[in-house]
Structures are given as structure tokens and as C-alpha cells.
Image (cartoon, rainbow, N blue to C red):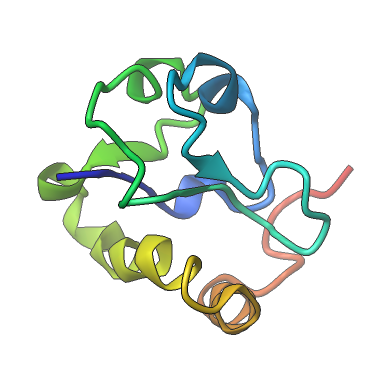
Length: 102
């Protein structure tokens, strides 16, 4: 099993989870085009270190993703196959401007 990052991360990209991950499996923090972070399911060791430090409660064990955010589960997988297509999908699922920008 892996951990999943869901919609609350979009346009937040707090790096607390990146800092505590012992295997560095969280991506997107240094890529301007990425509006959220992604956990690589092939690298995640299911340690749960990231979950409690997320300030917007966007990280869940895959089996525990709330129903309203289940559609974000495949996004975490697809990013590592085709990041550009995933960015387009994120923009469709949560259009830019629906959250505050700095």
C-alpha cells in the first residue's frame, strides 16, 4: 500500500511531508508547473511519517482516502508515468483561481 496526496494539497504544496519522508518519495515541490505534491507508489514504504505533518490534511493511506477525494488516487500513480498529462488533469479537476495564490 502507498500513501496518497489529495485535493487539499493543490496550490498549497507545504513541504513538511517532504522534510520528514525517510525515503524521499514525495515529488513536485521543486517543479513550478506542479500545483500539488505526489507520492511515488513504487518508492513509498508506508511508514506514515508524512500523514500527521500535513497542515491541510491532504495525505491518506490509500485505503483511507475520503470518498470525495478518491478520484485523486490515480493522479498519484499517473504523475510518474506522464507528469504533463497529470498536470492537465489536475487543472481540469481543480481549475486555477479556485484557491488563493501568493
